[in-house]
Image (tube, rainbow, N blue to C red; front, side, top):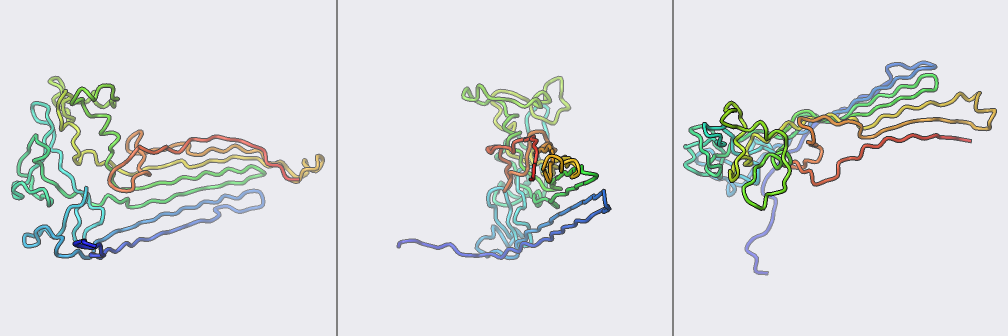
Length: 297
């Protein structure tokens, strides 16, 4: 067919983890039942082997290669973040980035040393920033029944991990051309460096500055979150009262879903991150509050 190669499995990867589910009744009596449940998972992805042809420079210890925003190397994580490092703001309010002179300008491998800084983002060296996967994720719930009343609540959570907050970055960027007119800004631009605010670690907000919000490590944000998934409260009328109207069961209830969400930054929802980049190009879960009557004859 005229092709010069073919796709094949050329490496070994091991995914391992543990999942625990705990549930039980804390109190169980004739009129009162209180149940609590908890589950959590921990997963690890490890690269076991890569072909020698993929190594950048194995003779000098660079046994790996860059793919997107990750550094792949035997023994490392499949989600080992690799980004240029922000070095702060200089005396003119410009963003600076670290450079490892030992790399001699090479950008196909991670740096180790922090030799000097540069205001040119493209000259900055790449550095490893570790596994971005969460350490723990899962959920917990509780339910209570007492003399006809019932209450239940469900939460889900994630602990640890990192995420590149692209939406926040987009709201902090300054205008660099006339086509940017009409864009929205985050209120944090008021924290930018100015001649009267030289202690700020956020670069100046100046038309034409192209590296103010360059894709460096400062936008790697905690991916931890807590979500109030659902809540229900209800009351079932006593059977003695219902017999007179020919009804076997009548329950009145009110319920809600997606009632609260807490993360490192308002507007950041790490649940939609399936790689290193958070995306807001999705519909967030709708907050729903409803009520009703359940009748059985």
